[in-house]
Image (tube, rainbow, N blue to C red):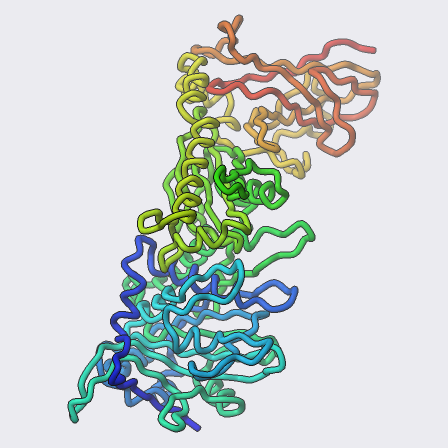
Length: 604
């Protein structure tokens, strides 16, 4: 069985056109590659099976030597719209994007829309490849009515996809391969009208069905599809003749598209990279461009994503601020925000698809499926050295209300058109988030933060005195003294302690500290050392007295770099022995440059 195209004629009672199906997606503000990532990952998450993480892989390739095989299998093309030019998009230079998931149940259930799924199975195949606008049957899942799948066709210059699935759903275990295309409605030579919907497969009894079993395996291998040799169930969706914005003849064009996809995965799907309370990782992501991998960073390692991660963990632990609906009381959702440093190093894979500019002052809104809907913008932090990120997640009771507010691309909670309880839930949640952000970071806090009388400008002018603070990079706790070029050399004796790194700004558990790494010279007797911090004034001098109500810097803790118990207060007693290195923690003073000095207080 080699497969062939079948075009859908209009039923006498009426049918949906292919143009209408594609247009259901609307004109999203998000980049189409971002929409693709969000829609595909949502489908994969809703289809998860078992306890293993869902593996989600996006591959970008040129057809190359596979081109003749695709031409022989998929042509002649059906009539109507872009799909009629399918041959042009099966050349060696043509681009295909393959989205794969594993440890999912595959597209199971009946292969025909009029059949009922047996007990223990779901109608995934017909919901993805045949039906449009069918309500989801996955409780607390990410999808709604399945219009978002139009993105797969929209990204194809030929409006064509190929779907290969290995099913493990209840008692059903089967391989299925089928193509689909959304062209334009047309009339044939006999004057009969067709909807513009086409399927490629095995036509039986006048109905297009997928290739099954060994037929599907043989054809998929001939087309060079990934396959399922490891025995895991899942689905591969191939976008044929993928359209990318870049000039595809430019060196690195495909790599740029892959980097953008990896960045979109990072910003839109990062909750799936956050381990659960039991250490379980929900999903694993990979991006490959012509066989070369692009790493999706761990969100904990991304400065501007870390506060979102910390907030999600707090919400998961039921430690956020709870929003409760007053009329017909029930919990609507939880909100938590966390601080971070405003300055962050540039990284292409982080920044190219970043959904906002500059440091975050946003809340990631999401439903129970933990797929980011959008980033709700709040006021900027009063201290320019800081930013914040947060999470608002709907409760199980309110999830359906927020699902009803989402457009086909699931990238907003739209209040217009809602009624009754649903409108109240969604609207009041927005007001709750806005009020809490204004209370924590809005004009009242901004006014309080201005008490430093312009010291923010001064801090910038004196950045040379506090390079770590102006750079915003936290000193690493696991670096050893051997990595420091200023460490003590053999045969050299220091009479005083010295600051090796910092002071730098660090945020721990939503609290800000100024931290320095200091070297204390060894001694033959026990000594007491004292750390002092002071605000630096214009000209480089030390501020002698602060104004009324101003926060004063103070050392709060010494912590040995090599490990061991910390010492509270500004002084530490160090016994006889060699050199030692310490982290010294001090209170952060907003809008101020800090100088730290280490002095020997006494011999014991």
